[in-house]
Image (cartoon, rainbow, N blue to C red):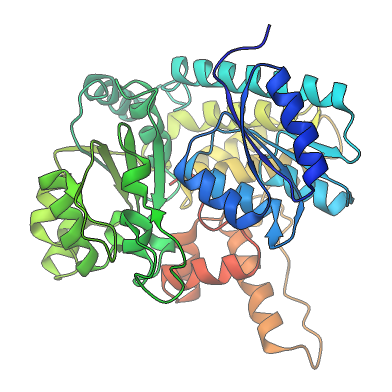
Length: 450
């Protein structure tokens, strides 16, 4: 018996295919919204919340991968099934890497499709329920430092108080935000995440508040912003310290008045959100430097949660390492265990990239181990392991400078555990510059724990 009320987006430019699949979905008892191109699909995922998205890979004006990228930015929990008549291994790998639930080829086996839809909807519901129940358990550790964080989250989650989460990159600020949302009274409402650092000064207000058609060059249609999409739920502004001063003024007004106007619009729209902010910067210092408004600082700093650096809770390192070992052994279907020497290396290293760096080191060690025992030789050289680090970039004469820069930046990105703040500092460039370069290299620069 199909579960009533599930809402599915179908994206396919072929009329006959779209009609056939629409009929299958409705026969299963679900509602369906159809789109024939990327632009229409992106508009729908930004304006509505779906329980499942089925999208063709090749669209007349773009790709189903772009539809999925936009969907994951606003509703990361929504499963995606990719359907294509142009199946290649590269496409399948890319779709899976971006988080696709399943990858089907045309002509679609309708019986297989029915099973995939049922399983995707069931698992998304189950994962949502389990995620709520285990939201605090996802923050791994029993040290006094992390226990205080968990206790504070439990204390304030049920309220609508504004929360500021501070801590170095890689300490788990986004996981803390996830736990607050999951334990709040808004748990069934939208949870919209915005990484402020990846938005240019020109785009940030349109992204946050939306815009009207014709508001600026390229505004060919009305677009809802993240505040509007988060209405009734929670808005998570990551890297809030990077927000331009001009945008801070408008953000403060929304928080004080609970209303806003879209860019280029005159209609005042009410909004009901719970705000969670995160930063790896010292906001008080930014205020003193004139880079962050003092009134906004006081407005968002109602309850502050400080995520401890991994070096401040060394007793949690073995527990975290074991957690990640189990995770990646299961993912890659390996049977691996740490040698005692590996755990000694882990506990003696300072982990400048924090939990994220540890996770990357464990994943790499799991896949590099030739046997059942993960040895020190499988660890990154900077941790004190025997190392896989390259002695150089092996440059060839006549190689374009852009290629050299790309290889060097990506090498540092991997070497430093994908900790963007640490990488930017190592390279001597700004964080926004690094984000732009990573995005141009095809890296998912806007995601990941902070």
